[in-house]
Length: 113
Image 1 (cartoon, rainbow, N blue to C red):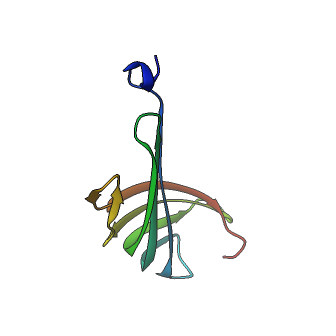
Image 2: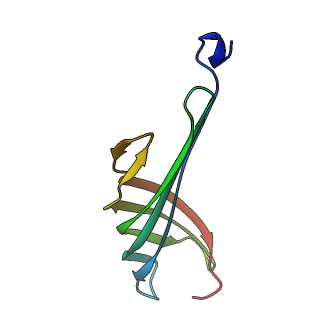
C-alpha cells in the first residue's frame, strides 16, 4: 500500500556524526586509560513518501574516555565512552537535539610499543 492510497508508505531515516579532537593517553603500559574532547558534527536526514524529505546538520562538542588493554605485542582491546552534546536539529519544522551517549568495544592493532 502506498502513501497515496492512505497507507503508511515507505520512509528512510539516517543519522551520522563525525568528531575531531585530542586524546591524552600514556604511551607505555599494559593498561592505557585515556580522555578526549573536541568538536562534533551531527547530520540527520529523513525521506518519506508522505511528507517528502528533509535534512539538517549541527555542530556541538564531544567528551569521552576509556581504556586500551594490550593483549600481546601488537594487539589491543578496550572500551570507549563518549558524550556528544550541544547539537540542535530541525526536521519538518520540529526542533530537537541530537545529543548522544555511546559505549563501544574496541579491538585493534598497534605498530608501536
